[in-house]
Length: 123
Image: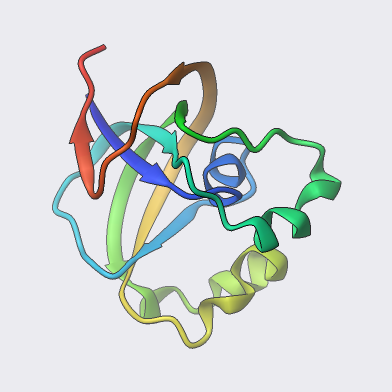
C-alpha cells in the first residue's frame, strides 16, 4: 500500500480530522487509499500551537490511513484558510500543490522508518 510521510503536527491533524489538505512542492497523479506516516522529525514549534487539541503527536510510525481525492495547485484552494485559520493560515504565500485528503482515520500505530514521496509498505 502507498504511504506518505508527513511531519508532525500535520500528520495527526490529518488523521484526527482537522486538516484535509496537505501541501507539497511536487504534484502526484496518484489517487486512492494510502497510509499516513508521522515522520521521525517534527516541527516542534508548530506542535505547541496544537497542544490544546489533546491529540497525540507520535513520530516514526504509521498512524492512519486516508483517501487522496485530488491534487491541485495551491492557488486554486486559497479559500481553505477560511475553514481553519490556525491550520491553514500560512497558506496565503504558499506555492506548489494541495493534496485533497478525505476519509482520514487513525489506525493501530506501526513503528517504521519513513521515506520521501509516496513509498510502498507491504501490509
